[in-house]
Image 1: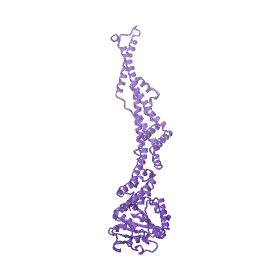
Image 2: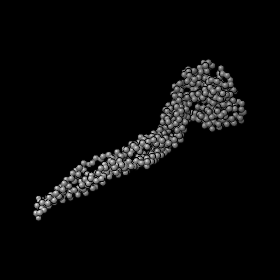
Image 3: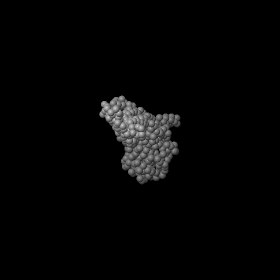
Image 4: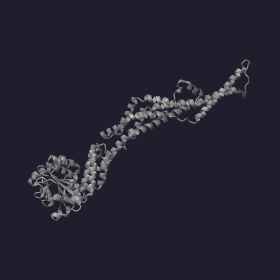
Length: 545
């Protein structure tokens, strides 16, 4: 009997978790799948909450079928009375009819099912004793799904979405009806656990015809994706096979899991629809690994490197280093050099202006093209493994940022490269030592020249104080000149190291600026798609069960 009811796949105990997972998937996929599909998630969630709250100990079974299939006769056979004939114009069932085994507590459930009160019958109170094994059963006789009356078809469609167990009653003449298979059975692939097919009127067939008919029906169901759905051979007229239907209903009532199984099937079916619409069905089928956490950090590092190179980080660093190199040489080197440069034609151009001129000259369409290429390469690397639609959305999300990105980065990197760099304190000491040395040498030179001028016409220069055997004017001149020369030579290695340090610092700060710029404009939109994909896949894996 377990095989008849198909309790093989769905686990009702985790229904709340699966409903929650379906909601999470819908949130992650909002804007990425058609809006009506997301709206249907809300409907399924609401229906699950309502059905769980209403008559949790009741099992709603519907007999559905086409005109003349004999579903009303089967309904009467199960009930034990010709109940379906009361107030019904034959041969078409116009309104659903409900028979309740144990009416207490069923009113709210029947109101939710929108079964007219005049179409509700309590099996025990009105029709005498009934088997206790069916207590909790609500059996519905639905209108004919192929009725020419539009309202009848709409009522069937409505109740098919709500009942717990569907028993499709077919006859030997119409079991292959295209409407039944295409509009109903083929759309219930995920509901195999709560679908049963009954071939009625088998008393009209001989043994060979019955076997052929059942084989053909099972083949059609297999093509519908319902190969495991139980198929029962019944004759409501003779009572053959009705006991199998009774046992099936008793099993459904006893386990009290049919409602949960039906809701779980709804969640699973809608989960697969979401997965298919989002292009994630393969990932869900394989319980795919997350992509966001697996995305190599080198992709973002490569993006930062490529964009920094595109905006001229090496050139900016070189100019900034050269500017600081000249500054270091002017500060720590021979003062005369600094004074000469100030008198030269380039003396009016500041280091910041040089850097700005370079940056502006490089802010060409070539730079924009290189940034575009870097962004495209990053998107391709980061979205590897994503379905095409997701990769396109990621690229589209990052695309509007490219034009703004170049303008922002040019301005920011120029500011970084042109920013003043604090000079080390010892530079001042070096500069004043140079001034002092030069002053001593000048003092000695002036002294020597003065003595020479005083000796003109006298035949010899006046004497000068001496340091031992060395006259002070010569000592001052030589020591000052030598001291200035030694200080200049000692300082020659300093500017080179200082320039390298400045270049490295500019590169680091430019990369920081690039990283800060591409983060919200390029990386974040792409990562949002990756995270949404991961969240959706994880949620859908749980939802479909």
